[in-house]
Amino acid sequence: MDKLGAIFKNRKAVFSRLAEFGFKRDGNAYRYTKTLPESGFEMTVTVSDGGEVSAVVVDPDTGEYTLHLTDSAGSFVGTVRDEYECTLNEIADSCFEADVFKAEQTKRLIEYVREKYGRELEFLWGNFDGNAVWRRGDTNKWFAAVLTVSRRKLGLNCDELVEIIDLRALPETITELVDGKRYFGGWHMNKKHWYTIILDGSVPFEELCRRIDESYSLAVK
Image (cartoon, rainbow, N blue to C red):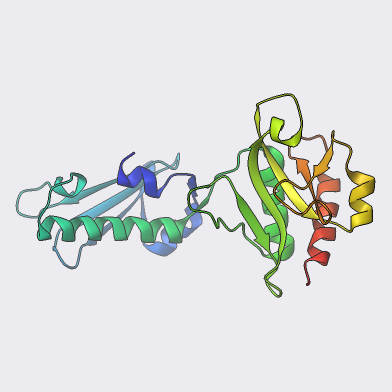
């Protein structure tokens, strides 16, 4: 995977942020152009209406430049490469958001937590981008984790990958809930205090929201 693809992997454009950053509408896309301060080259980044990102760097003397995309050595090439990657990272951080999880319930829960608690998923493990957590803003304690695992790891006879959520609960509540069908012992968590739900519709969305609220209230110590 090239550097541009790696930077924007599992991210989606938030189009309202593009204009704030400096992108201009141009036909069926948004474009942003800047002069790279060290090299003096011109860089243009394009985000299509479908969210696809492309970027070019132009040498004002020759009209093109591609050495920054190769493994070529040399301090000047390295300078252009650094400017190119820095600009892309800045755009990714400012105008894009994580788009790792694909299940419909997961996406709805992300919106629910964002609207009710103002919290965003945190991806704490760089090599495991399918794992993320929500933390309370006041105590910094986790109140939920969203992960991608196979059903077999939850004790089911299937290798299908699914998205799950780990939530806090009182021990007596967990004892009542866990049935190996809709509710499972906490995946990679202390099973006395955490349980797991597969985000496949087996538990209704309204019930999931209530369970998240309960978990949030327990994340205080």
